[in-house]
Length: 290
Image 1 (cartoon, rainbow, N blue to C red):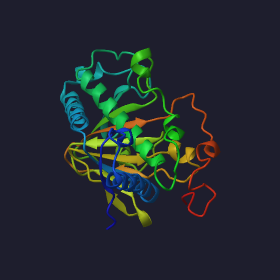
Image 2 (image 1 turned 90 degrees about the horizontal axis):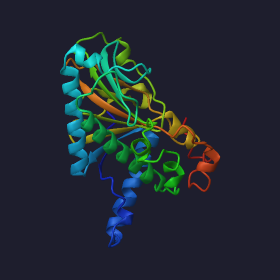
Image 3 (image 1 turned 120 degrees about the vertical axis):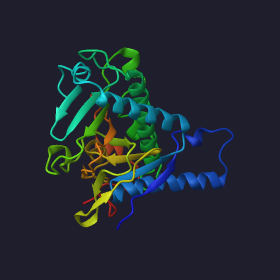
Image 4 (image 1 turned 90 degrees about the vertical axis):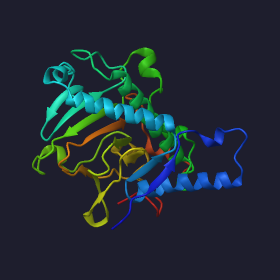
């Protein structure tokens, strides 16, 4: 069975470190950047093994806050609903969903665990931006990190200006014993740039591998799966492709948090401009993906 790529990862930009890295450190960093490209290009997903204690702790607290929310009373959950479609609490076929967006209007009632959810959003946002930075620095692209990072919103904008973030955290609790045909378990692609998935459960998330075989994505404490989405594929002229994925029923009431890192609404995405000067061009023999 095909093994998915797992990488030790930290969000810090080690090229900005002082004193500068020596050659062994640079070789290790080049290898990491290239491994991210190869994993997303071949499999559409890369699993990060977190090297930042504060990020790991922030995600763990966020997941615990999600679990406590889903274990609360129906009255408490309904109070977290929103009149805006796709925001707040909702029930779907096979799962319960809590959508949280930094800077979004207040929900119908107070949301317990909001500070922990804000920290989880910040942690996953930092991770996603770091992945795009390293992806740009891969030998296959060789782009300035602003080529992709510049399409995102100002990192502090939602909190500074009180405007809803373009990106959202979607926490889900899957029913323990639903029919596998439930909508919550249907294979699908995501819109946006990246999806970053965290869960305390190791099993449940799967991606479509070569030949259509479903591959288990190893999660659990200290791991985050990063999936390629449509907007990133489009921005790179098809050099990467969005990955088909699903959640496999596991009978344990799985709780997960998926952060949708999206481009800012006003971003003008010109694949030709984004990939100008790239080591691999969309019309070259190495791309785009088919």
